[in-house]
Image (cartoon, rainbow, N blue to C red; front, side, top):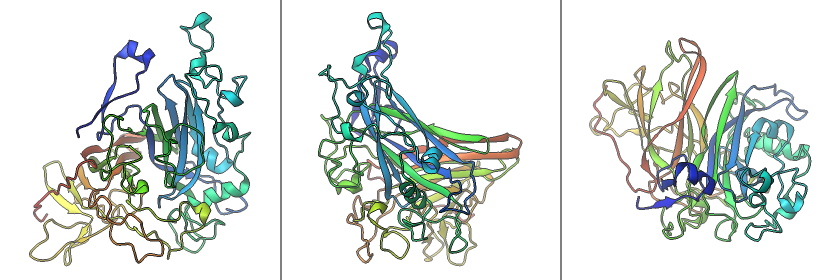
Length: 490
């Protein structure tokens, strides 16, 4: 891509490490204007409304950090795996601040991080801005906080009524129940009518695995607000900031093991070289392709290693996959009521272009494709003779965990690498009760994110989990949609 962006100058850091550059349309670990936690899991504990739920050990932690001396506000939004938001809140960050969140504490206890700007934190107790060792006497540095006495720092007037949130628990029992229900694929009153996500491991009318799932976006904003990114007025009205100053990380912890990575850093374009209407951007579906969000898109094709369960990693390989349905529906959130569908959103299930498994001798088999007359668990590309292949949706949700070796995502080799072309074309949804207003937007290109998890429970590697981001091959900034082939029959 043609763009190169100079990141926010961090005066104190420049003296140590020099200038920091990053290239748009190549997702790298740098300060950014938006952060993505591509997938989370939270085990729910029993409540009066969820009597069959037992304590689960899984939790997801994330941190949001300020890479600049200038204070700012991070706007946090939780989304279900059908990509509808459930709740949003603001985190005020002083200069070089860090805030860590346990999602189990949010879901099970109703606790949200409590922060405040200088107007409501005169004693500097809630969000202290720390000491500047280089300052006079090494005392507090007012430049790291919003200050009525420092005209160089914003006052964040919208935070006057929004922050601090109060004492924990912040969420009322009824609202916490709505969030818990939504992220386990149930309706507003836990009545098994899905609103923002899918029910997992359902075996009956009241069955559920009681793990909350979804993803999180964190935007750098100019002031506190209660808008979702898919609502009018969020972008293009001055609420969002194009300053690349946020960074963070995430961890999923379960049974004494943890995997983690950097939060996905999504940079905003430089004002001298902005994204223009028609170019793919991260929030493009919510701004009708007009690029008013000014956020770079993610990759669209990927490469990653895999191991079938073996002596070293007997737990095998899971892929944590976030995808963009490119669909904007009229219902903004489950707070507006359940989506009046037959049980699935209009884009479901998401398709993909090609999934190819390689072994270590460059043998290749296309999987996630059914060929009539051929055994299940993999096809060939191109198909034999005039028999067309039938696509199988191996990654049907906007975010999810998928085990390599389960269903059609089963390579015929013990280990090797996977080529994942997750591009697709959003079809005509006009016949749906809640059609997408963005049918056909961006053509066949679709952004995504892939994290690979290797697990060992009792194998030679001991008890551990290893997580890492897959390798990005093609950015959604490009119209390329590369196909690997022809692939001979295995």
